[in-house]
Image (cartoon, rainbow, N blue to C red):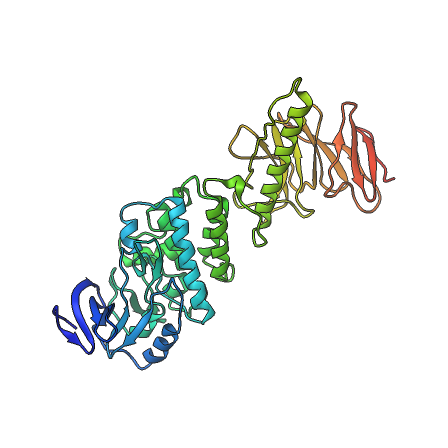
Length: 456
C-alpha cells in the first residue's frame, strides 16, 4: 500500500516513511483524533480470518516493554510510535558492553514473560523487532503477528517465513528454533530459543547461527553449536549456563520459563563490576550460594590470621575473594557443599559436580583465576588438608585416601567397616602426627594413617 506524505488513511495523517521490508512498509503518522503520533505498518496482502482473534490477544498485552497495538485495518496495523534505533542497528555498531546487553535482555525477558502469561507467543523475536528508546527503555514489536499476518511467502534471506512439506514455518532464519525450522508446532519455548540467540548476538556482535544462505542458517540451527568461545571473558558463569539452557535443541531440556531467565539476568547484572557485593536472593542457584560461602570462609580465615600474627596494633585488613564454580558445574556434591582452606592459607579446595558426573575435588590457588580439577578424586565426599598443605585426604565412601598434589596416585590410608561408610559429607583434620580425625555418625573417629580403622 504506497502512501504519500500528507495523505489520509481514515483519521491518520501520513507524515513520512520509516522503513520497508519484504512483507510491507512502515509509516510514521498522526492520529488526528487524539493528536498523537503512531506507526502504521502495511502489508502487501490482506489479513486472513484468524487475524482478528490474534490481534485481540495482542491488544490485551499491557506492559511497558511491549509495543502497544492501537488499531487494525484490512491490511494494516496501527501501533504506538517509538523513537530510537532497533537492536539490530545497535548491534551493527559492534558487541554491546556486558551491563548494557544484560539490561536490554532483562527488559526483553520481562516482555516475553508478560506475553506468555497471556498465552501469546511471539514466534519471530529478533533484534529488528526490538526498539531502544533514547531513555534506554526497550520495546518489543510484533508480538504474535508473524503467524497472524502471513499465509505464505517466498523463501528469501529477508523473509520471515517459508513453506515446506511439513507446513508453514514462521520465523526469521538465524533466530528460529529447531522445531520452527522443522515446521513443527511451537510454544513459548521457541521464544526462549530466540531470546538466547538475541542475547548471544548482543554479547558477541555475531549471530549465534550464521549462514550465507537460508539453508546454511537452518543447517546451523539443526546441527551446530554457537561459538561459545566468542563470549566475553567477563561473562558471568550464570549467564553462560543460561545461554546453553536457552539454546538447547531438545526442547524438553530447554529452559521452560523466560521468567527464570529474567531472574538470572538480574543476578548477573547485580554482579557486574562488584561481584562480591551481590546480595543473597531466594531464587539464586545453589552454585552461587556456595560461591558466597567460599568467599566468606576465605575472608574470615585471612582476617583471623592477620590478628593472630600481628605484633602491634594496626588497621584491620579484610580480603574478599569470590570463587565461582567451574564452568558447567555447581558447588557441592551429593552430600552438600564442602569447602576446605589449606593451612598455609594459599589454596581452597572444594567439591563440585556437573549434572551428568560425580562430585570431584577442585583446588583454587588464591593467586590464580580459576580452579583446577584434581584427577583421581571422582566420587569424593569430603576433603581434608594435610598440615603441610601439600597433600589432601578424602573419602569416597568407606575408604579414606591420601593424595600428594604434586603428582602420583592416591592411596588408601583408612577403611571403615560396618554399615554407614565413613565421613560422608563431613570435614575432618589430618595432624602432624598423621592422625586423621573425622566425623562418624554422632561422634568422631580417630585413625592413624596406614592403620586400619574399625567403626567405633
